[in-house]
Length: 183
Image (cartoon, rainbow, N blue to C red; front, side, top):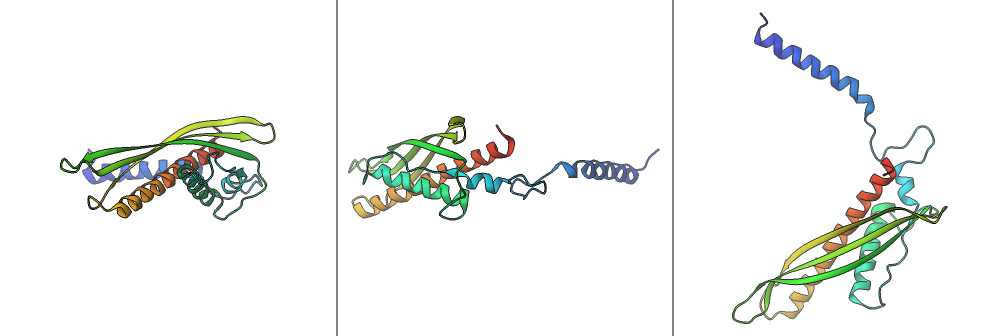
């Protein structure tokens, strides 16, 4: 009969052996390649981000710039990337709804802000779409005080910025997945 300590030691040895066998299968996503092929960082730096098509000086144009800037920082880390190999076309719509209304004043005390985005990655060499997708972001915000217009406006703008950052993060994650796995 095997003792309890011997069985535990045998299990640990089996786990260590399996871990040793699969350790060579792991490669970090952002690692540089030894074989000379471009790594993920270089592939992401080749994505061109054209301006979002929204009317100038509109609130949605500001959000489009916010999404584009956040995405550029996540892809490039700087203001510009490498010579473009792909182009990312972005379209989005926004929504806003009141969640809680004060029964005395009928003014909202909590609101929800949302962005629904569609994106299309186009290979510039063939001018064909290689990946499309959709993403969304919903953020809520409280309006401090009932009649404080500036506080309400600032809370709304902060919600727009948080939603834009979330959209950029979702798109960057999807692009990284595409360039790593090819799907």
